[in-house]
Amino acid sequence: MKKYLSALEYILENGKDRKDRTGVGTRGVFGHQIRFNLRNSFPAVTTKKLAWRSVVSELLWFLEGGTDERRLAEIHYGKTRKELVGKKTIWTANADKQGKNLGYKNTDTTKELGPIYGSQWRSWADKNQHVDQIIEVLNSLSSDPYSRRHIVSAWNAGEVDKMALPPCHTMFQFHVQDEELSCQMYQRSADMFLGVPFNIASYSLLTCIMAKLLKLNPGEFIWTGGDCHIYYNHIKQVKEQIQRNPQPAPKLSMPNFQSIEEVVASTPKDFNLLDYSPMESIKAPMAV
Image (tube, rainbow, N blue to C red; front, top):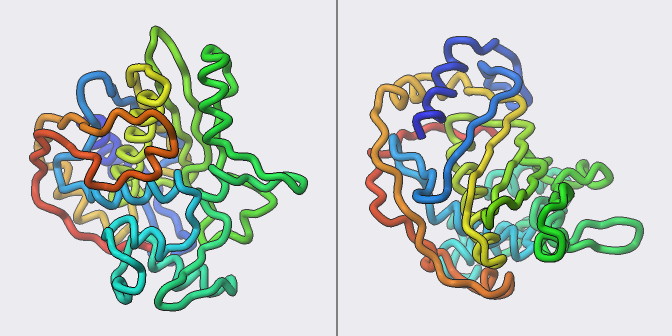
């Protein structure tokens, strides 16, 4: 993750200050790319603790097609939603603010977010039909591995205004070469301190899962950012983090899945980072 720390340092030194939607303010650059080798290790940040269970829970929720934040809570905590009243997830604030403002049901046991990632991945609405992009890309990777059209998009222009949070990671593309599966994701809006390490881990995990289903080896994950920014109230934390020396990267352990249904039926406990020794967490507020 040295390249990630270098990106933080580059933005601190070269970024421009801008106002933003949240009112917090940012320092950022437009356009940046980082490549991660997935062949022998997993790109989990070690200069602070990664919220690994949250990474896995959210990805399983997306792959399930979920749009109810309380369902994410069930996956994350392994309990029924009636047992989880008051327990928060990384999407609770968005449900309680943007989701509520859009008029979606918001109670102790249901917190709808509209047609966000999970809906777009598994049930993209198009002219009275619904497209399961995950199944379609798995099929295309199997039948025509060298195609340049292995793409999943979350940016459904006809439904963006219905989403509690328009997708920050808008699309991703798979690439097969030498029996390896690689993935590149484009992130239009990148919270470099809180969000990006989480997103890198999430899409690296997705790449490894897809490779397992296709009986391929993981290759690379390429993260490409659009508006890459550090919030003003994260600058102190970023300066602390870039002074830390990264530890050896962990390895990923997960079941030998045979189908996407088996993946969706799994739990966060099925996915483990081996030899992961991160430094202590660095707390920072999330801009909503």
